Length: 543
Image (cartoon, rainbow, N blue to C red):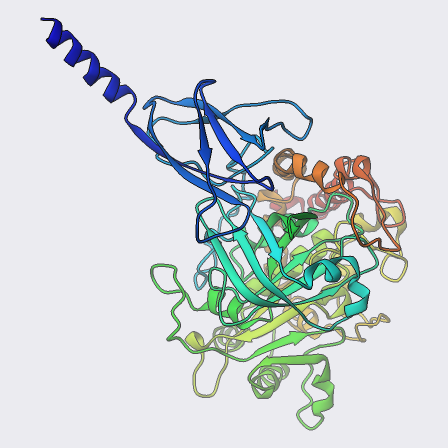
């Protein structure tokens, strides 16, 4: 009888404490332990093949039920950004943690998404783990030249330096790439930007990635917000994710990790997905142009210097010129011709979405205001021997919602968000972007039908995404999610001091609805609200 009771007790204990759990955590310390339910401590070790900031070990015979745990680093219990202790919870049935980060209470959190009645861009692989919004990846840059590069970026100007190794830590794993070529720009602020070119390898298929920061954006989220909106609009779009960055175990900052629209790896991931949403490397690559300031679409086959503001990234300019020829011949008042043009030469739908977003956000550094910061690409999947279907792709969305908006583009002062898009049609521009906006004037203002189509797109974006109720809820969720890393971003002294650091932590945390930009005229929220309300007032029949 006693033996039976003892056996039953052993079986019960075995079933209650039978879980093996892999703990994985990022730490800048030397020794990491985990304490389970306030009881036993277990050492978490660095993987033998990886001498970096990742600690990972399997702990056996842990409770099958959900349990609480916390980490201890070099003998000291972890605390949050405010210096308070906390515990994490591992749910029942989980055999591993996600990649925790010492001092951050929340490892994974699903964020609300902008919703729009359109499918995601059908040729794209999507965000994948690289741009998973539920997790904040950590990037650790290492190398013998890295410290000097971070402290003295002006010394390198546009010259490349080699990062020996860069580690990208995601919620379920990591990518470690070697011999990464890096350049820097926008050194007017301490948080300068870095472009990384990954040689002979990739991170989830990307070979060019940028660490972007907008020194003029107090919230530092404008690019991230814009990117998520255009992704959910179902147009070809660069992907972004917020990341914390370290170098040689020193803090560098809270950045937007972003792919580059004019890179081959972006094109492969955005246009060459197979049915399983993986890149099909057997598919052909089209011609890719980088539209820099002044690049427009008039037809001048006898004067190729006209197209000098297009920087060819793949192929040559022959297909671009043919597109301009087809556009020049197009009778925009003939619906049959427009339909054929869209099928064979240019995706009007995604272009209308792109222009609606530029107008709604006051993106003065894009095509409509400056004929700049876009790519133009022809998709072989839709090409014929004589026609080439092109797509318009926007990038660099930092000069938005009032940021950097000066007198060159703003002739209306505080009323700028209330001005109709119609004031920007068939206009002779006197800006650095050149005198014409050919795509706008032909494909929006070119006929009543095209203009009505654009207005339907514009008002639909306001109805589903760009209205105070929806927009406010999502952006505040972003701010809540990123708050700890925003605080961390201002908690350390950077080795490089830029001449124009605009904001402090208080202005950052109030960057959505209190801190004003654009000569002190707009907050992000006020700009969005005024423009959305102006669209509703101008087009009441659509609401």
